[in-house]
Image 1 (cartoon, rainbow, N blue to C red):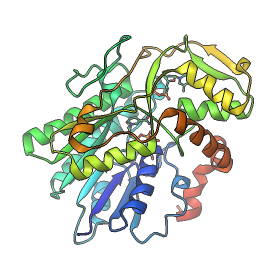
Image 2 (cartoon, protein in one colour):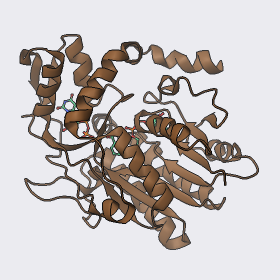
Image 3 (cartoon, rainbow, N blue to C red):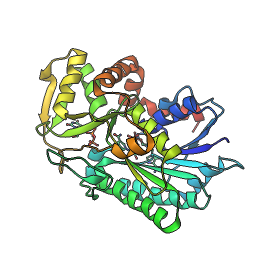
Length: 340
Ligand code: NAD
Ligand code: TYD
């Protein structure tokens, strides 16, 4: 049976990697990509697949009922079988500047999407969330699916709000939703405001590398391809109502990541500049990913030692993409493609 998968936020970092993977690995599936093309949405991330007959792009906002309806209608008579929901405001520093866009897209947008999906009897709905909803850890311990939610930034609070709405849709209406909570991703097509692509881009141009506070905050890093495979496993085998943590078993302090990037690029550590810490900065995230391993058979395929050099090389090989994003020229790509 042909499946039709509505992906929201498919022009962003993880969403575009997921759309590419689906079209390659599941050639029988149809993909509809609903994306508002905010500053983080970039159709250049999807270059080369526009003409794939199994792919449809819908320019629209998940907070607008009529846009979401249009995306579902693009599924035609057989309709949409699955929704994979990535669309969100995703950058913590921006949420500290202004929380409202986060509440709009992440909370309200998720409810609009849930209501539309519920009215159309989809078979599955994967809500892509984050480990940041659990808050911050001390030196030891891991987040499990039972860890109480304790979000600390407007970003993570809005994601926690969306998780609760998804949970309620399942509890109240029996809606077939699953929730994934993943650690920090890295890989191709990540917007260069996030740690790894920002440091690669700045180091290449011999610009300062801004390290917040003492640089000893710890994140667990997962290669984006691994994350996409985990989401596919949840979409295909996950149990409705369940939460699945996704992690990379790759915990490093930020400063080590930055040093490692400098080493790979053969740049001096004198480029490192310690700057004022992020307000409310979470100290450590770490994931216990046993459940998805034991129940769905997913485990990461890439170690950080393998995939960080691959990622650095990707940014070197795709300098045109990076420059287009850094200069803002990528904003014109939509107009050139779609005349809008
Ligand atoms: P991103 O910021 O790169 O992309 C977000 C995409 O969503 C963009 O294409 C943007 O245009 C679109 N979008 C935003 N608001 C929209 C709206 N109102 N309507 C329609 N489209 C909208 O984000 P990402 O890093 O790819 O993250 C994707 C999802 O994964 C998010 O939900 C995020 O919370 C979650 N997540 C990210 C990470 C990470 O390390 N990047 C880790 C765990 C979970
Ligand atoms: P980021 O990529 O923004 O992801 P998140 O805040 O969702 O974990 O940041 C990763 C870590 O790197 C986080 O501890 C903040 C830190 N950081 C810096 O030290 N300097 C920077 O310029 C950025 C963007 C992040």
